[in-house]
Amino acid sequence: MTGRAATVPPPLGLLAELTHRCPLGCPYCSNPVALEHRADELDTATWTRVFREAAGLGVLQLHLSGGEPALRRDLVEIVAAARAAGLYTNLITSAVGLDARRLAALAAAGLDHVQISVQDSDRDAADHVARRPGAFARKAALAREAVALGLPLTLNCVIHRGNIGRIPEMVALAAALGAGRIEIAHVQYHGWALANRAALMPRRGQVDAAEREIAILRDRHRGDLVIDAVMPDHFSGVPKPCLGGWGRRSLVVTPSGLVLPCHAAPTIPGLAFWSVRDHALESIWRESPAFAAFRGTEWMREPCASCPKRERDFGGCRCQAFALTGDARATDPACALSPDHGLVAALAAAAEDGPWRWRTDRPATVDARRS
Amino acid sequence: MTMPGPDSIVADAVPRLARGVRMVESAAHGGRVLLAPERLFKLDEVAAAVLDLCDGTRSVAAVVDDLAGRYTAPRDRILADVSALLRSLADKRLVEL
Image (cartoon, rainbow over all chains, first blue to last red; front, top):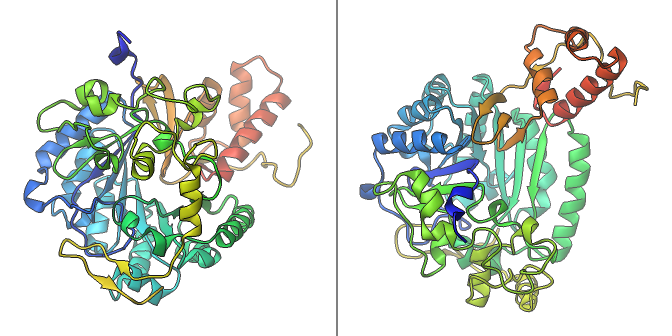
């Protein structure tokens, strides 16, 4: 299609993975199993340029993530640079390694919102998942410090078989800590989570119960706590729209500067990712082959190509399609219309208690204790 | 709907954007956008005009009076529309009343 680059709509959000370093070891981490190294991380000046280019391109919201972004010594400067560029700036943190004093400096630098990951409402279970004694207490403390500073707060709870039964307790915790929002997001099976899929997969009865509970909780907390929930796509027969469409709304910049349509995109072989070290962000968004690969609907095959929902779910997740079928252009097997849907149904039924493989940058370790 | 229900907004409430919510002008996205934690809402001209007035000093009644002076719609109709908009935004924690 000629003139296509000119018609690419502007993105809305940018996820900046400031570092892959992290003090926690969650077995469902969305970082790649092959983590990027500190020596390769972008410097402050380059991030500052990226933020300016992002704002110029139309990006409105910036998510500072990791790994643990607080491990960057220049985090306050990074937040100030993001706000100077005009971006709505959200910090996604584990709270470990971020004290009240630096949080106050971040707030003064213009941080708009802070999101704290909480592994569970139960302290011991939470510290076990994070693989860090004392992590839960630190998170609760930082949550209170954020509220005291007047920073809007979200708790982010990743859900899996071991904690899906405690959603009401997690919502109660968010309310007690003064959060305005809680995200109850089921594990997405990429990266470390893929390696732990059978041990993390909930059972159908748990998912059904969780959906009923969330509906009740939303009603109860309307106006005082926003509850955003993402349920697993293995049980519904409906695929999740991949980030609202590949290369349509958002981009990810890795610690070393590679620009991805989605954080899991490098799992698809053959995609060439451009770096902010070599190209302006606008050119990467509009012209790089990795963003063009699955943008729009022209790449689709049947049953997607003629599906009336093709511009609603965009064929589902490309990374999941590749991981399960070996073909990134296939319909996401999460869709009931996919000829490979049986694969997903089998995985959903294959929940199996077993040791977790913990996230680590050292050789694989396992812990036989079940949560 | 003009019947005041249990969720209706009292005229002396003083609305303002909730903490963590900002309204920006985006040329790339064709107008005003409300930015909130992990969410954004493109605003139509009317919603933007209402929110411009929700500065934490004006009451709902004052907002409606101002709009009634600028638009030709009946005041009751404006009150109903403004109330519905603010209630919906407050339920999403975008506006504090």
